[in-house]
Image 1 (cartoon, rainbow, N blue to C red):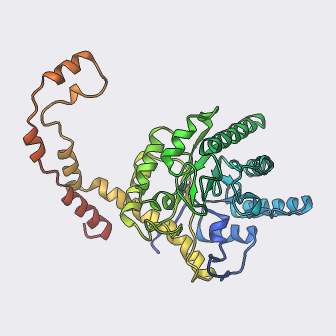
Image 2 (cartoon, rainbow, N blue to C red):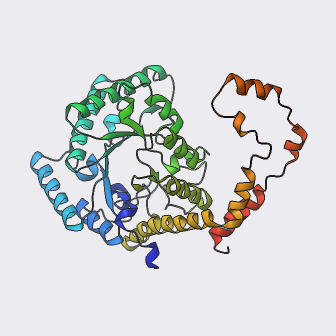
Image 3 (tube, rainbow, N blue to C red):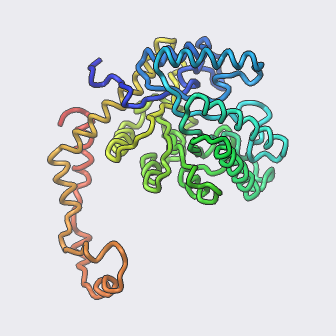
Length: 389
């Protein structure tokens, strides 16, 4: 492999313990790989060149671990991190696997389940803070319904808001400096999940008591499952200062949640995402929430992880080429030329601008007949990606 595509700490590539730790189980088949301990996974990620790793609370500490077992696991994990130099930028809570959460966690109809979810999350926030995490992600994998007869959609949103307000206050009371990031998904594992898109999450955040503390964690697959453009969701979150974290993988639109290797399905979409992140100078982790194919052994898992990072770096290089390509930039300059010198009439409203606009005559037919060269622009983009420019 070319050295220019080797991951470095400054690239901030991270993986979840649940990603490289996947044993290949699916709804129709048993595991195909042996489970690895968190310490083993730290060393695997160090071997492939990752910057850091992230975990759900129970990825690291089994839900039924005793206090003595917990302390041992934490001690060994810290030692592995120190030995390898890996860091933990993000942590989260598993509020979807155990049967207790079969009808949701923060939105459950049962107040005892909601209380337990808060308890579990506070303990997990403590754990994340102990390892220096800067972002705490909330994915409501069971916050939804199969039938609207079971819950009030309005009451569920109130319960979700109440839980997040509670946890924001806990974060402040403990003196932690964690940012909270909400992760949207349209469906699966429930029939319908609440707040199914990044845009829905952004609207919801503004209703929270500490909205300044809460942003989003968009995921490629979750937007593409419902046929949406992931880069547009990321751009919207960035525009309002709420892009606190993001999950990179790939997904065929309309399918189940596939979590494929980054860039392995929608290469052009991946390119424009990487280009956006690099153009705006996104400072956060490039976190890969994906899994190796079920066909793979341990070496295949390493190839998967290396492939995610290598593809990102290749696309980063292609974005630089695109930005420097004279023909591409010439077309863009022409598209954005103010041929009729009307730019001074746009932007911030004034009564003078409004009057001038109302009085101005526009040649609607000429404007409609103008060719925009988008076919050529898109073809040039493909040629950059195919390496023939």
